View (cartoon, rainbow over the protein chains, first blue to last red):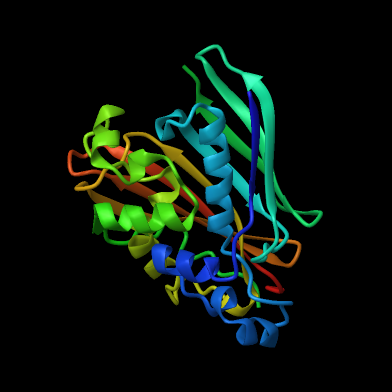
Length: 124
Length: 147
């Protein structure tokens, strides 16, 4: 099983994700505010990027969301709109109960924005 | 300013969230889901869901109403200007579907300091209308410059 997903969040994605999630922190949706606090631009919600890691793992397991039992991630670099994100992962462990542990990361422009992600998947 | 760990163990009142089909659609669209089970009731029931299921990470939507008051609690005392979301874990049990009423309780699991940074760990436990656990979340926020 191989985990791979590419996605390019468009300019207005952080606004749509803010509406969908309820997280309207201005660092995600206001370029001027983001620059005022020392960021190069508005940044992606970390939990949006985590959702891409979740989606990549569910897809790799066949598309059934019930197969994703656990996901842990570490947020590191910042993610930005209008740049491609690549999620990759590989099986680290196959357990006796049929579950697999997948080590996953998300990278954008050479930065690992999520690292040491670990997904536990039930494969059928 | 050193971290104050006194709020460790504090638990907040449950927050109820009723899951709706259109909110799932909005969320699924925002995160780029294209599986028809998130948009079409027929596709969902054909895949043996009671109703349209929520994508796993929809957990952040129904947990937020419980988690936010804990995060912003002055007794926890996070300096937001210096805070970053450090890590996150979810452990899923029963699937969540449209029509479910999800109750989430947040607690402060741990507050500690290491290398001049404060680590604030919260736990959310979400259960459905039948009392079955649907997800357990561990939210770690890191605050720089605490000492």
